Amino acid sequence: MAPDRSLLRTTLISALGGVFEFYDFVIFAVFAPQIGAAFFPPEAGEAAQTLEAFLVFAVGYLARPVGGLLWAHVADRRGRAYVFSHTVLGMAGATLAIALLPGYATLGAAAPVLLVLLRLLQGMTLGGELPASLCWLAEHAGERRSGVATATLMAGVNSGMLLGQLVAAAITLALGEAAAFAWGWRLAFVLGSSVGATAWFVRRQVGETAEFERLRVRGVERVPLRTLLRTEPANALRAAALCAVHAWVVATLYLALPTFLHRHGGITLAAAERIALLCAALGSVLFPCAGWIADRVGAARVCRILLALLALAAVPLYLWFPTHGALTLALLGGIGGLFIGAYLALLPRLFSPEVRASGLALGYDGAFALIGGLGPFAMFWLAERYGPVSVGIALASIATLALLALARARVE
Image (cartoon, rainbow, N blue to C red; front, side):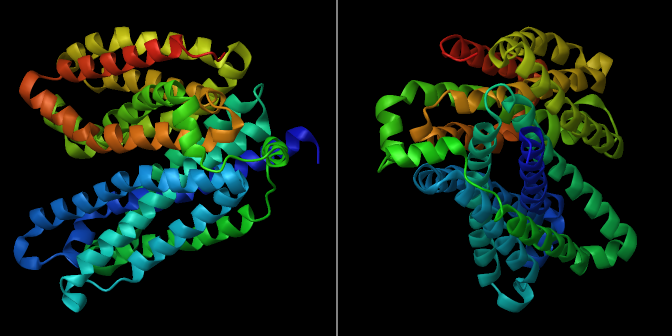
């Protein structure tokens, strides 16, 4: 198979797997009211049930670093392809188990306990999926083509969020609100698990990267994480700083944007949800475009420019938000989307092959557990206490920290 066709095939396999693995992860939030009603005591009330479901959703984020480091250990010792194929199977199994899990009316207090355990499993498998996929794809593509390849993977991951919203709307339209609320939401989980199982079958056919095969001949590290912390701790911190920008953009300018627009911009919730979906869809287009530019201009150079833009534009755009509306935050989300598409090519280059998966897991999953999990809460707390401009100051600070981290990195 020609190199370009082979890379296209591996990129599409990665991206499609990312679509459905992230779909499986985020539909929990999409159906939070239904899940809360099914698995928590009815006497608590609908608001409390929904809040408890969101707390279980957050558990998945907290589990990501643990799962990421465990799977990264396997990826650095047994191979990226091994983890790449098995994590999607774990996600599919956990998602199917949630679909079939009896509710509180049947199991009582055991229902939410089992739900938390399954959510932990989902978080741990997603934590291993993305670092291993980035390793596998970047090593297949090589430095000259890794930008567009890794950015396409992230476009697939981002599209999983959009797919969850579309499936939810389709189920409600087909079954009606009452049936969708009572049991129809389980169909979305069944769909995700079945497609995930198909993705596992496809991924089983992929081969290991040539770079890891050479590493296997030289000898792999016995404890890659220990080696990483001894030899490349600064690179792990640099990766975390770059990933923190990614996590903040996704958490505040994509996932939690509808509520922010509704509460602080005077926009109806329905309109705010449409705007947020449009911004997320735009991100899926911008990621590969930025990756393509990074391959030709240099990923580090593109990232420095975009980080500087974020640092300089965040405060003025949030300052203008109350008077100019959602367009200011959409513009900021566009700059953030371009950064996400460009910086992914840099991450694998920060680490030597012996500890690459472990370094990515520590930086990426650590940043998403902290910033991704707490980002929406921090955004609303800052906005309520100090006004929307304080959220811009937070983004500018995170972008400046990442810019300083990138200045010390020996990558281009």
